[in-house]
Image 1 (spheres, rainbow, N blue to C red):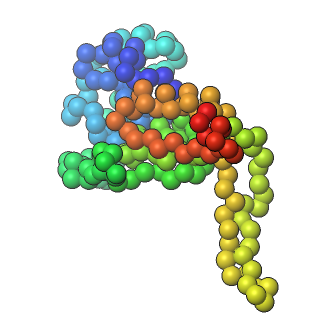
Image 2 (cartoon, helix red, strand yellow):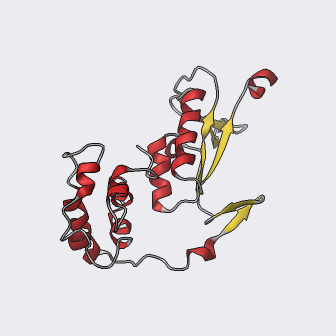
Length: 200
């Protein structure tokens, strides 16, 4: 997904930022995208210069999508946008966060799209899936049993899964996330087999 900062359709529109709304649609967050638009449909009488400026010129019906957000999505929105989100601001170990909600280190925090979707939905940050330079072999099942003295199962152990992407691929994900979401927090969990690997 391209950076929204310099998106050509945003530059072509003097009244709204269509790319910001389109990313909400892309991530199934239409309600918020619709509610963030100006009160009146500024796209209704527009000749849609954004569509010509789009990197996929002629392929994305931006005006229709924006009009649908106004006419179909906004009237059905059940909850208004919050006005006091600043009250959720906090810090963890001196790191400022816009709210205390972070994705855990898991499969849902292992790709650009999943993290970006969370950021668009309002999550403050992610604890990215543990990265390493090991060869990854999927474990199945991912739990093992802890047995008591009599052989009965008394608990489970989680078999940790690591990111199945290379360190270089994950670094590129981090760069894109910080470029497109500079205020969001990313905790990168790393693993190494020896001191040299940790240092690397």
